[in-house]
Image (cartoon, rainbow, N blue to C red; front, side, top):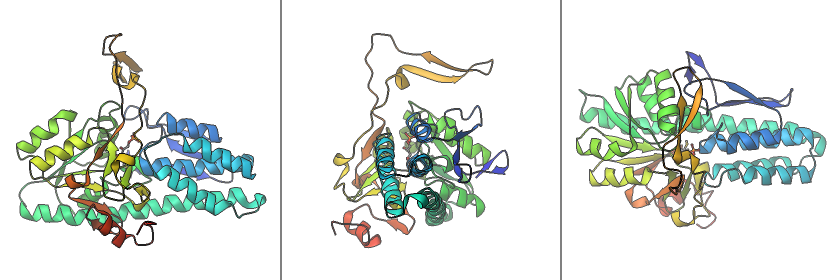
Length: 365
Ligand code: MRU
């Protein structure tokens, strides 16, 4: 998608030089800076520090982490160590393990001399497939937006989203945002309510950044405003992403997603979740089995932003002795989800429907 009118992807590699490039998302929207990563540990740190984040992009970054590790040492122990290091960076997004397993299958049978090359090829394929997948999610999601627009053609379709499930969370297009970008191409008027998404403010800093760059009308709201807007009839649909979806259709996503789904249900507003099939964890029977990441409490006790002189600052907002707890994700039960929008089309959030749509993936079918 576009940044200052120029097309960008979130990650790219230079296999000849043995390095990858990422957009440092911790600096957005204030600064757009590209980072070059040359070593496995730099990728581990980029994922842990959330310079790259969002389930599909975490998977792609981990895949390139394997490439950098094999560039330096293509042995089996080096591969196993890299998988372990990367596998421990973030617990909830299942795309991470999915990408690592895929990289292992691609490089394990290859003699050491050819491993790094095979790894770059596979990581490149993961990225290309992600672009195709997100485009396809967008086309299926567009059908839903089109229907809503036909119902009320004189006003924009109002879509509420939480966190950033945009192109910055994937390689391009995004998951939740892809239908919105496709609606724009079709000239369907849309307006997006963007939850700020405390504590890290991915909505305010990332979703607003990319919608602004793409000239999509949008309004930033505090996380608690969604229910009120729904009661006032100012939301037509909700679309979020997901970090891991259990095979019964329960959805893990950024903390606060569950409350939006409850409010949507209470107001008869459809709550959709957009996801690539790589986000479905067929080994998780339901949401209770999904590990929830707990992050540093300073994300809650402090706010970060840019001051009037342009420097990035952190300020404390709570008393020193107050305890804080920071679960980063929650589970939205399948019963609250109107539909999962996948690369093969919309599907009901239950095991039977998911298995029918992806018969080759469910080992429990
Ligand atoms: O903690 P983050 O920023 O990695 O969380 C991201 C989300 O919760 C996204 O909604 C999810 O990964 C889907 S991204 C297409």
